Length: 544
Image (cartoon, rainbow, N blue to C red; front, side, top):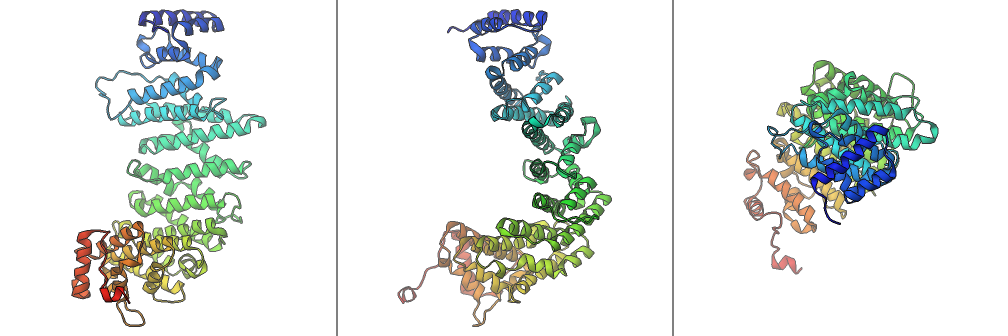
């Protein structure tokens, strides 16, 4: 089929737009004529998209035509329109590549609403690609708005429309509950992704100016009684996304203030995990989803508590105390619940230890929680759980979490926890326990032990204790174990052991005088050759 000229396409669209304007509708025959002139539905969409961002030179009002086509012919046009708009947005509104001094595109309020409706479109429950395209397109527009210092107000307009749609969905009849729940979670997911763009975005989500959209998610996740526990679980998972911190989504002060100091969030979570002023039990359905969220909030507090105001710190410390009480009453069953418990206690310990002196002292004296967290013997046949315990302890000892803290304070806490690890395991020497796991036949357990040894080797106060450790036969067990690389066959394990070596040989440790000259030279050779280096075995030993 031959391509039509721009003038012919404009003429066909003008005729269709006039029919639509005069009669508030256009017949199937009108559409057939338009499609025949523009090479089918894809041609129609392409012709309309070109002027979608230039309303000042769009006499045919392309957006109105697209809205009409999607509404009247969803099976034919909804997917094509969503996909085309997404790709056009990603091309035109790339904040990295676009020259904003020449950019004259306009994001109209009507266009934002139309895309928001595609996010919760009636048949997008089965055609998830439509909602995915709408989500990606709207997020790209918000990223550009963020890049342009919110000049266009796209984020605020979007939140207002999403809040209105959310209210409408909550008023649906019982026979549409499933579709309504799916659509509500799509709105929540987009809102969370937008909030991760920066502090201004989450401030908007919390404000009444944007329809109070964050409050709707909090109500869904935390209100009691809750008639839809599965929807509540999904809402809790969505909130957990706000605690995510990465290179692309650094933690902002506004987000930290919300997570560490929001009363509704804290009270609702404590209710679910059975630690509130009311006499309630741990929620059997969503208690662990709430536990995971509190755990993530604790991790946020470790690095962000110093950036928030004093009143927020006070609220966060109150949350920690209540969380500690809740964990005492918790009896995890099964591997999944035990893993959640391990990470919860380790995050609580790290948060308390890096908080006030009083809270640090309180958590270090809580032998019940420490033993429940650090005991390996209760998981003797579960290498994955053992690995989780060892790795979680390494994360607390890791110097990186101790920002703005004196070395003496962090060293004291780290050594206290290391000794508590030994006491929790039949009062054995902690290094003996770690080396026992480092020699495990299970690679997961070995890697956990390597993580802990690397964290210990990163602390100058612990290096001497490791290097001079001797077992019952009075041999330098740690050094011999480390240099005997034949005990580790996996590449991942060799890499992990090499990181232990790197930490030990850091200039600050100055270990040369603590071990034999031969051992020190072997370590230097290993460091020079990299993780793949292996120690040569004497011929007589190799043939014994």
